[in-house]
Length: 288
Image 1 (cartoon, rainbow, N blue to C red):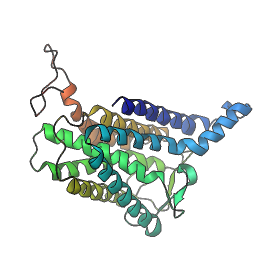
Image 2 (cartoon, rainbow, N blue to C red; image 1 turned 135 degrees about the vertical axis):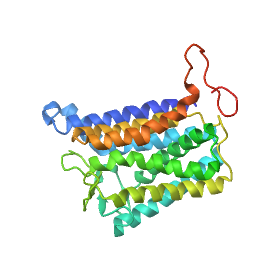
Image 3 (cartoon, rainbow, N blue to C red; image 1 turned 60 degrees about the horizontal axis):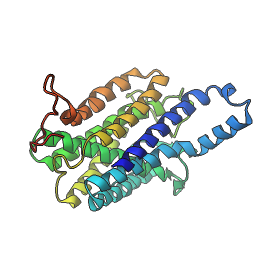
Image 4 (cartoon, one colour; image 1 turned 30 degrees about the vertical axis):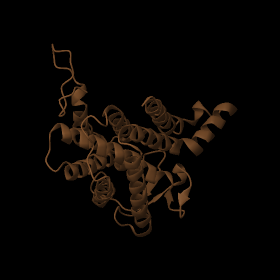
């Protein structure tokens, strides 16, 4: 778990570094263009930094998964999420279904079939994995019936909530750097509603396949929520910063209410009741 924590710190630093590059350095070239050293650093960051936070995010959740749910389940989720999401992305960039008409820029590195960056399936993996584990934790705490099905549905919802704030920023003409561009518009802050449905369908597909192959649920207390929660919230806040930079406050409010707020419930066992000084007991009766 110490390795996962270290990778988490690196992932968050990479997200912050990327925001600085996109929102400060690109719009203000006078900050770096006069220095050969800063110009070299900027050029290198433009070539590599776009994909770095994705590689690190995937590394965090791989290491975390190995330490908590085990190698077999982590491998199943990794393969299912990468394979299914890549298939949907290749279909989407080729036909416009199920996400709408879009294409990726060169900002995320080399592409599969010159259409989908290799890093995109990794982003589906790590955000899908943390969404599913958070959903499983929350529903186990609530002793929800049919935990497997409920976790898949809620995990797909949390994953979609991330896109509520991410894609509107990417669809906005004022964003100085885009990782993908839209060839159609829609009523949801310039983004087609079809894209949200595609996100839900993709997330549900690989979460359902993973849960089916797992043949069981995550045990209460097996996967402590702090690391997946930190990964989820860091990436949602990153997208919020992009939306804020172009004045899109509606998506920020929606992602907060529909994504961060319910995800926060996963940390219930880490809360301390006033005057008691001990964590709330989890569903197993053991304090987190």
